[in-house]
Image (tube, rainbow, N blue to C red; front, side):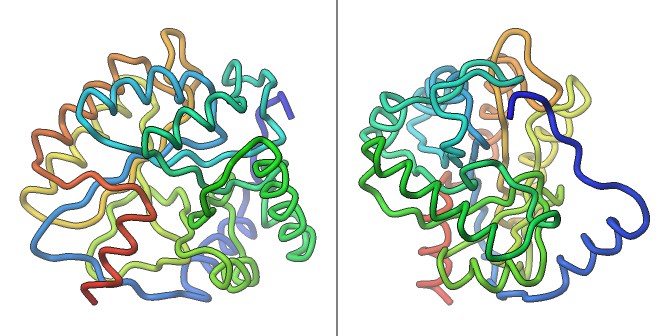
Length: 255
């Protein structure tokens, strides 16, 4: 699981992704009078648990960390990955630990039963590592979803996140929430900053996702300074920063 994986491309793969976005939807009404931001980390590297969490703490915020337990204690292209100590420290600080499958599976390439079994394995492994909080939130690895997995996972998790780069406004699909990456070098960071700035004009729920936060990041990561710049833009926007679990609960309660 150390080498980067590239999801399928081409016309058929593109049509399947588009179909997954429109099928098996679970409507969730977004707020129109205030902005919400959630900052998430996928997989997750130790740098996200350390440098990323330190920046969030300076603002008094908590994030959502999607854990793939098959990576725990190992090293991937993102660098050293999280361990038991990271889980305990993050949960004690109020961060949300969420599910990302055990083996970081591409849902479009395996059957639904195998995908669900890998999620069960992930939860067992995280429990064995000492996790006591509920796994309420899920993110599809690579953003790859199918209608069948959306339907099945909606019975298990309160929210499912993808990687379609946009802000959730108006009526969103809680089974495949949109999110904005914090990566892509200077141009990508500028887009992430612009997304936060747009909230004062057009409120919604802006979900960010990041991976490694280190001096020499991967193409899916960012430097600590770049991450801090995005967080400063969020602070300037006046948005309320919540975990995935907290945001969904608030929106469902006000519906």
